Amino acid sequence: MTWKPIIVALALSACGVSDADKIAGMEANRAAILADLFRQQAECHAQAIEFSGDRHVLDACIETYRLSAESAAIVIAAIDERITAVRRGKR
Image (spheres, rainbow, N blue to C red):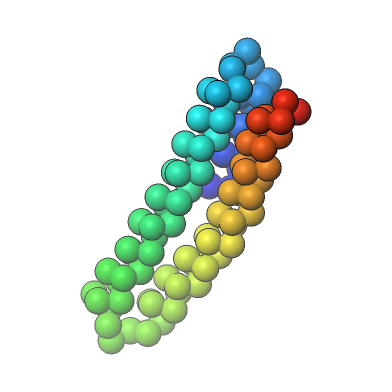
């Protein structure tokens, strides 16, 4: 999950793609990352219900979600920096 958006952003910047298309692609990657976090959060809610008697399952899910959220924050920040650079013409 972590490297794919960055690789896509770099690939788009190397091609003959317009700045608007580059930004749209990066924004789509950001949206996909956020959607994955919401999906993972919903999965933790479902596990909390299904495994209500097993705290270890919920703890593992929450820890995985926390790590994913930290990773996503780093990647989203990199995407936002790249979008800003493209908008400023620093391809």
